[in-house]
Image (cartoon, rainbow, N blue to C red; front, side, top):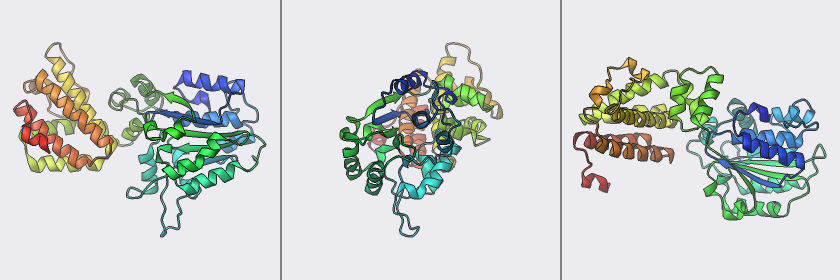
Length: 383
């Protein structure tokens, strides 16, 4: 995906970029940032493709010239891709991005909305120290000092610059402050607050907002994915999470099954089953765990509202014996408010890479107290 017209989001941002290209106002150092899974990497690649295109149109790259054909393969000689990697003496890896470029091209072609977890999974690097190293900064500086292959721009795309170490960032400053002619350093970030101020203050920044539920839903439907409405409600604008959920054929129906079972074992404080369900959700992965807890939030809110107006049963519960009218007997506005707060906090913990098993187990005990007593004992909150 290297064409602006292939990206069904961010119309305002794309229009600004296209106008800048038309006017020749191309800053030498730019930052695209925003929430994960919102397509900013796709826009960055479309922008670079248009910048390097030998026959550009009003809508960006032509798609037919040699430059465009090479960009489609992510193998343009004037574009350097830099991203978090690991080093390994056993594998003969020093940590240079170039050593992992084949895997990078493959994973980006598979899913342009990927996040760093997808990248880590691609490299089987769950226990590795991932970062962008000083050696990459040196490679960038060396590369930008050479003439371009097509006598046009030289481009460096740094994906996830939040993984830049202090020494690496400092080594890049000279090229950001005093660039060579016709060079572009493009950074694409999901955690802009983690970047050094000395870097961000020198970049022209473009914020890409979170996708709306409608945008996610429409994209899923365009791909003929079943359950698009439900998935869009659970992923908070993260199209990558939405696509990952669809890869598990049973994921959606399992949400309701897990919820029904979880509420019952929480209510009865069945510790062996609490531990077991924590392990099961852990095995399903982080995307499923967050989707499951968001589904819980949604169901609890619907249950509270059902007391004031008729509510249609969620079709995902058809495989269970869950009845909202019965669940409503133990849910009231007071404990619902506290339940929602606890689940929200658990979601944040999981997104910050806390242990899914531990988070679910701890949350289960808290849910028990809120369902049975309406409050969590003070002593429990100490831990």
